[in-house]
Image (cartoon, rainbow, N blue to C red; front, side):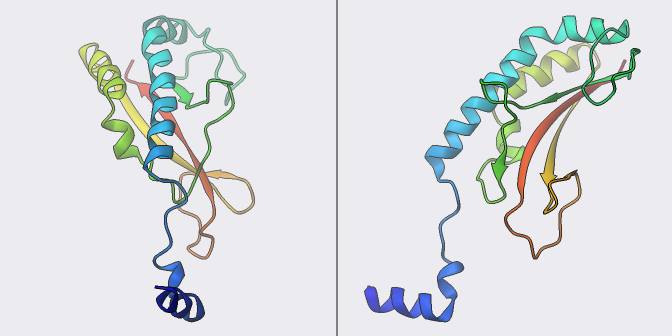
Length: 152
């Protein structure tokens, strides 16, 4: 086995077979944090929508009062910090959409005719947030998730 490991290391092929940055345990821990954040959104969504319709919701991206026609929530850790995941994390938009809490939130919003979008935001090599994929040569960029609700 060590001969094979040495061969893979010397040829650079060990990178191809390298484990992902996080494993399934860490993925489930991150999904639990995400489900808790989605549960907080689910608990307050009706009052947040009414507050936003009245133009009183404080949007972090727009300090001017008035309705923007949508709500945007950044998925945060329980400490209030943004949950930032490495690029090769096993957590994806699809894995989040398959959680019970996301489905309940989506169903509740659909009953009222509202639209929910889950977006992945990448942090490029300069530290800027972007929805576009940074250049392929940078394989260590981080990302976080945003839930956007609209339709009123």
